[in-house]
Length: 170
Image 1 (cartoon, rainbow, N blue to C red):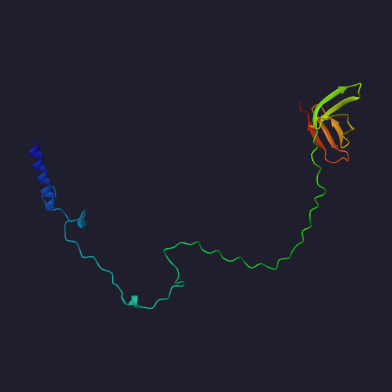
Image 2 (cartoon, rainbow, N blue to C red):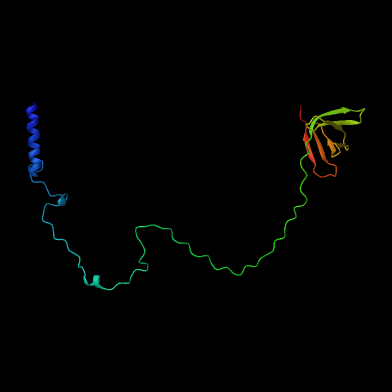
């Protein structure tokens, strides 16, 4: 059986090397594959005008141009501007600087009808505590504007720099 396979392989190799097709006929050349088996008409050759190649032609516009490099096209120059008139800009008044934030903490409320209403208790964070009613001064620098249930509104004695402090526990 092995001998039969070797014989078939040798036969197929021999047929292919001679250029015969599977039916025993010579194989068609590759340039005529799919065409009729008859003789092919000669193709017409275009008429070449060699004189036109010798004519003088215009020289290229930019002989330094390299076709094998890529560069961005240069942007066109900006259009000429008309004479610009300088318009003076008035400075914006900024006013006096705002005062620094009030460094006190609102730590509690005393609600006593005998004392005349609500009393706010404040701390400066250095161990000093202050108490005041609405309209009174605290530490000689701040005025209590309004006492709410969970907030206090303070301002500097001169009325600027109004700030709301929230109730904070210590």
